[in-house]
Amino acid sequence: MAHTPCVLVVDDDTPTREMLLEALATHGFRALQAGDGAGMRRELEREAPDLVLLDIRLPGEDGLTLARFLRERYDVGIIMVTGSGDVIDRIVGLEIGADDYVAKPFDPRELLARVKSVLRRIQARPDAAAAPAQNARRVPFGRCELDLDSHQLFDSDGSEVMVTHMEFDLLRVLLEHAGKALSRDQILTLTKNREWEPFDRSIDIRIARLRRKVEVDPDNPRAIRTVRGVGYMFVP
Image (cartoon, rainbow, N blue to C red; front, side, top):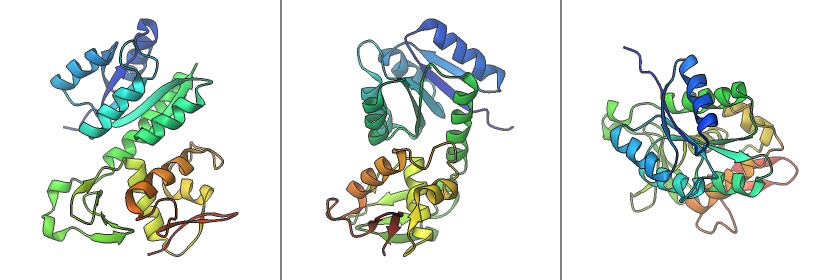
């Protein structure tokens, strides 16, 4: 039987939450709901969803705190829901490890498109348990190693460095085009994230986050180079 994707909606506004639940159910998703961080944790104890749709403005723990909690403990997609003018919150959310964001007020069709996009990236990942560990293809990337089979990043001491699905896609694309400068538009095309605009800061934010993970000195990057006027290039 095919897996039905499960989405957990975390929003303290009841009408918004009910609208999202109805839209998700109409398009074939299983939807769970919570009105705050405590409710989110209760739902996570019952079932780990495939994706969490997380409002930033929540009572008690805010969405940014909860996004950090999720990224540290669960392998789930995260889409932040922000106010239309909350640019800083969007940037911080992406730096924490959110896969995408959508601004209120939003068109439910746009939100569903973003949900499907993130889930496609998640579902495209091969099952790491399906192949023996000795068959994993690990290649050097800065001070780390990228495992192309399990979609994981490992530090020099062998410990796993957590990366989001989009971050892995960026590493893979840069690796596949080593020594070639890629524009932001090319990166969007190669990572199949055409819903973002080439001038969107999402790529720059993720590059900066990746540099902190793979570079010996993130302030003087040697693996992921900035090519002025073009974009970015991986130098093995």
